[in-house]
Length: 301
Image (cartoon, rainbow, N blue to C red; front, top):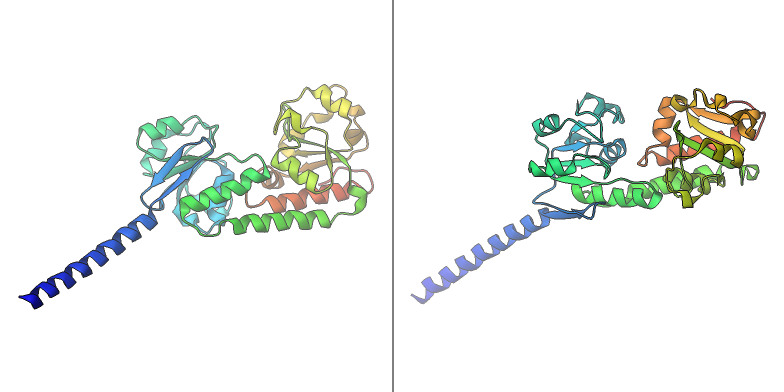
């Protein structure tokens, strides 16, 4: 009887150990993330079916080696090339709810400015909202998406970005320092302010942004503001350049008068204006503009 009791106790101990291991493994799989809305989202396990409604978020998922988890994207997500084959669910701010639901996502990644978060949540779909506007935001976004995907050391991507921006800055001659720049992100005109990720990159490159941090990351400006600021160099995407010289008083701006305007191609603009893994490449594009504008006046390609 004593031997039988000992065997039963040993069996119970073994079962307890197995259950403990299973519970520990389950707990290890569970995770939670607090997004930019301040909302904490809980996951029983890392999501395997992801819909992304912002190009920078799409690129980040892929840069972290998890492109295969994406099942749908917004219409503007086009990099890397593989995501173009995915289902498109419309614009990021106001996408097609039915199309998203049909994809049966474990989570939807979107901007905080998107108008569909509450609706998706009411349908039982988990939402993580992230909208990077500064370098610190991008670093935090990488960390948050790394948590969602359960990818260790997601910050390695930030270290590569940071090193790339530094290298771009170090490649520039001292003559570039203190060049006064106006960066237009939309012909309204909306500009990149000094505390936006674009403005912070310009600062690291040694340039001076005519749009101060007090105006916000991406303020809408009175065109007269740019005329009075009289920048040395203008950076603008090809989609927004048309008609710029015809604006009242703008022909007197030094950058336009001396043809120191860098007009980025659509592909270059997509790199420069997306706060994500390609920010170092964006820094190199802006650095090339600044260096080109130090020579003979002329519109940079």
